[in-house]
Length: 59
Image 1 (cartoon, helix red, strand yellow):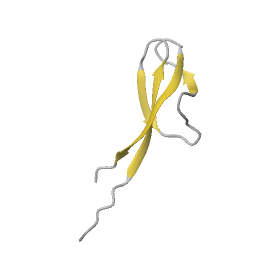
Image 2 (image 1 turned 90 degrees about the vertical axis):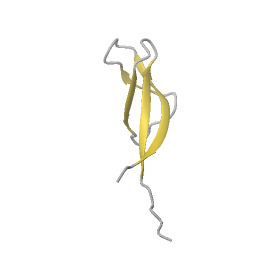
Image 3 (image 1 turned 120 degrees about the horizontal axis):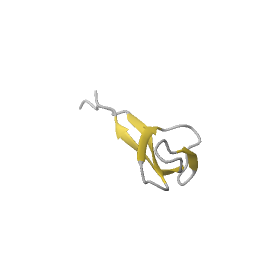
Image 4 (image 1 turned 90 degrees about the horizontal axis):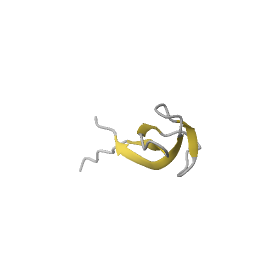
């Protein structure tokens, strides 16, 4: 009867290839799987896009 349309928010999960630190951030245009993004804040290794996913926005 009443359809509640959920808004999906896209996220990108980055992982360091050296220390395995994970960082979840908002998706940016141009992100794609297994691409190098920037340096790790912990060990200066390279961060790799590990996963792109969406989560419903809670209202």
